[in-house]
Image (cartoon, rainbow, N blue to C red; front, side, top):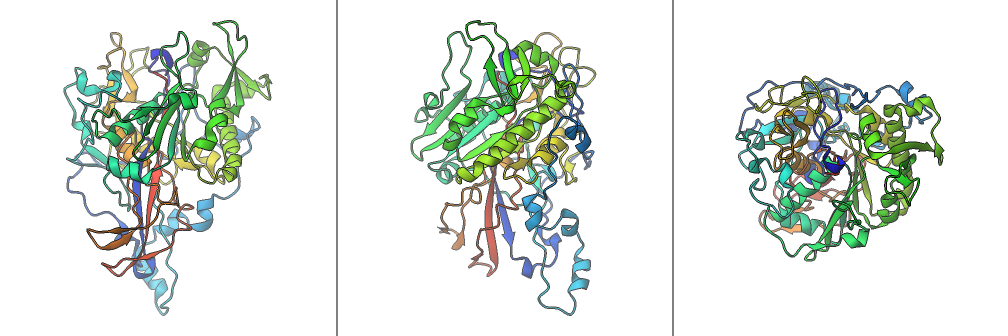
Length: 536
């Protein structure tokens, strides 16, 4: 949130806004030789989760009032404000069978397969938003005491008075999906000559910082060049900070940038000569930054959510505009409908641009939950729990809790990065009462401690861009003597787990012969970014 307003939104136990740029390796085996889907379930983890597995309530709507977020989940709610409800089937669904069919038991498939040697076997697609949190002694991926070059002190909980850090020792394990360990050097090599752009609020900024820490291993990196001027990211006179940051690693010509746009709308000053002017908030137009620089991006992750409340509108002096004129529609004037209109408008615009930018892979991350209990940030709300996964460790649902974003991307080329439910389980990972800037009794139950949740989720979010950036050649693995597509998973950044669904992405990836096992595999790496919003 801009200007240090770190919290002003509430969601139905939804609180997590970090996860967005890190990789995930998706390996699809020859299903012809593996009739049982259970073969692809991950082995029992080395560490048992000490809290009970819990199915996060499916499709829980988020409510919004003066300082809270609310998202209607019905298509009727969207249609009343003229938002086109997409009835087209998802691209993924055209290629991959529905999840319920994928979950058929092996016995069912064996029975159906009797008497036929060539029975087609349904292919499974990895749903990164479905899985569980598992303990991992290798976490976190960088030190909370270091990485001062990139990490803001207000989010570095190791530098605060907090004494419990158990939340750092977990990673997200998608159900039935293998994810390689993150290596900064490998990530940069795979992203050679590529630009990764995160556009959204402060949770996105947390993702950005965490990604930079993961790529550099938390070490001081003077070789990283500040190229913000190329994208107009310079501090304006009187401003506390620029509207974003952009850095380039010369060794691989990889650029990673973050741009603060809490609403994703075009904001136009109504009186340019007045420093205290109000702004026309064009709900049906994307941020100018996106229109100016879209052609330079290879991976784009968008998010918006925690600034859609009356308090933020008043503080930022935003006035709703639609069709270039002040909004007079009372239905759109309701915050949740205005947000929905913007989400649909941005995705529709972006989808129309993608055919002209074949190199670009675009994702929209679902909302990151907040965990205020017994009040909001300014009414005594808190998040004092320090026991990891006290409310459960597992997400079993197929659909997203953020149904607005899920419905908006359906049928488009923009992919969904769903981090809401898995983040909802991590209420112990917030900055809480330990924030350096907090007033007495004020808790930050929106932002996450770094490193921890963001990095971990990010690790899942930024999938390996093998599939996303199809021009990565096959390589010979000298160690195993196997022919693979080396798509490396990106480290746990804000696993704002904007986790893309790679169903469509996997289409054109040919199979290869695995010399070691003699099996045909499709080695795919998916890249995901989880960004949240807030300019702090």
